[in-house]
Image (cartoon, rainbow, N blue to C red; front, side, top):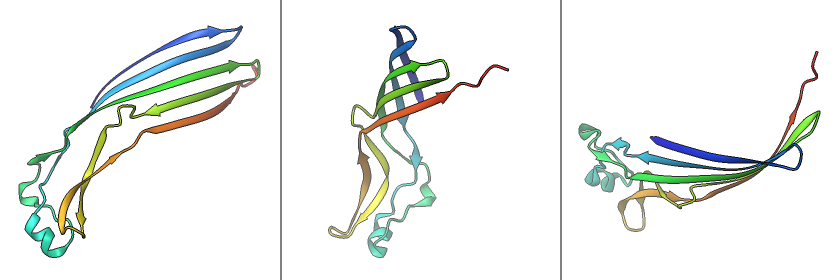
Length: 129
């Protein structure tokens, strides 16, 4: 896995902070055993050929994540409103294999999803002793 991130903050009003952040991640290439197609078809379940372990390799994925933050700093606490979007490029993630009962074949099991997050955080400041 390789990752690079960057961000920029701007001071807004007296004590508030607005920030934009981004992260680029290269992930993948995980090795796995190939599917034993004959045995999987006979059992109607995915069976991997462990005698040839690490011969297959999953594809490499490129992910871009971004976030927009607004932080309100007060004397006793700070409030943060955060909007994040993960997998902005809608990369297909390889999760393994699944047996398709309609076609009686083993197919790659992949998931494509973009994760939007909205969060609100309160941080209380401890009084100085």
